[in-house]
Length: 422
Image (cartoon, rainbow, N blue to C red; front, side):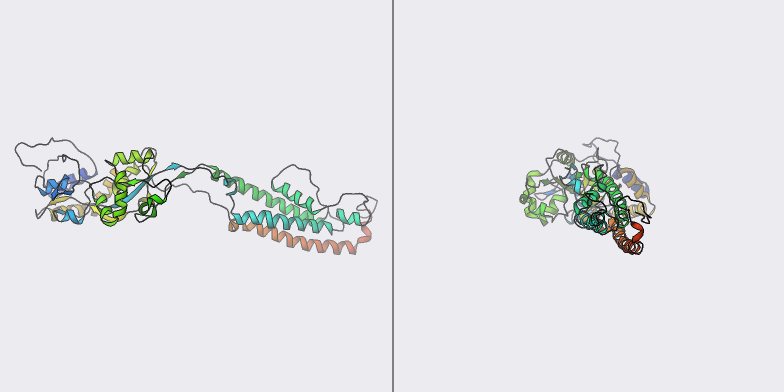
């Protein structure tokens, strides 16, 4: 408030989160007020022993209170009284999403390397060898018929033909293949065909997610991250800045002097300039007040701006109302703010003014690589099929040697009593 007879400010109608808080406090404490904007638009910094901005207005007693996004810190608390914090804040980092690129190996990413090795090195070879061995020693297979002279000049079943058969089944290609005759090898091929259906369906379903051009976000863990401490180690150098003459710059200058000296050339005139620089690629990261950044990220058109770590905050503090030192208003204002929290009104104001449509975390479930654990079932199925085929192989031989006199003509096509179920 100003009490001069000729005020040098113009009364304006204002609105916003802090203004609504002021309205509720004035109603609770029962006082009236006049609002005015500080001439330089700053929060307040001590320059050559003199405070400017909102803090300066309170220190020089031109105003009883200063309301806004005033960060509570030790230096300011020496010259003004602060109310209890009405919102938690600190230092946060904002970056911009950028279009990523599709990896050249994206077509391999639906499955982990272990699955590909199991598929092409172990299972394809082992299964092909199993089919070949079962067919080679089958009493009614191609090779037995040739060896017994029952089908002179007929085709033989080789390991190459077994691999080609299983390969064709995996990719569902209509290529000419030679199907086995033996019961055991037919069981193995049938189970492999079922495995191929599952494998191909899983690959196709997961491939689309890895071929999509994902958005890329610079990952930084905090102010001590190497990108901030040694930005020139990266190519191109990591560019970041803040708005000078504020508590954020003061904190960085006191705790990270080398970082502060580097970022001076990237500092921005204001928040809007910084957001524009992020979107246009002139700035890689913007360090500023967490509450402001979360607010701007939530209301960003296109939702391209995000705060790292879903709004992770460093050097936690809060916003408070600056009051003239020892004026007697502090206790009443504190009680009014605490009452707003107790009644849930502060939460309603935050939902009204501070919640935007954008969120850092995506709700959709992103696809991930299928590893051995995901595909274990079908691998177990193949293993069980081999065990079953081995039992069938033994039974087939026992059956053949027990009733071999009935198999005359099985290969040659001559009349005879046939018991083979192949």
